[in-house]
View (tube, rainbow, N blue to C red):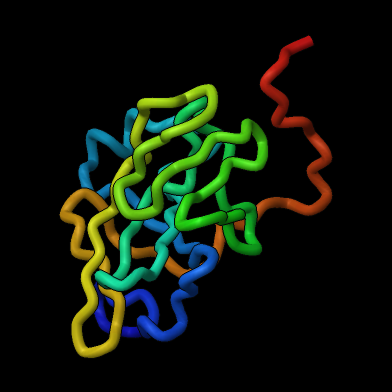
Amino acid sequence: MSAEGEIVPVDDVPTDSTFLFRIRPTDAEVRQSLDRESGEIREAIMIRDDEGVVGWLNYCQHFRHIKLDKGSGAEMRNGEIICTNHGAYFESDTGFCNFGPCEGAYLSEVDLAVADGVVRLVDDDYEFVGCGGIETDPTDLGSKSNREF
């Protein structure tokens, strides 16, 4: 989409999975404090429901480097987003984890709105970068394991 903040037509957002997009913090101090390896760009997901769309950062609250949507839509069951790494269940409308190792935690919200049939980023803390996930080097076979050896 071309206009500032416009992400995607609302009809392109699934109701049974997630739509993946990239955002960047707008605050310069926040940008400087971010992890050098992952850079300043973050992944976010959106889900469409009867009320409109909701947006979350694309990271489990148990281990925050684990992505919920790995590029083909997050696993969902009965309106809940599932972390396939840990088995955590997050309510898609509130972000609340009601089962799993991070039970009681909340996903980090990204403010979205629908106007004229288009989903827009309306969160003052972020700017829209693009659709899809953060590109990685397919030749990098390095491990992103939780364990260090």
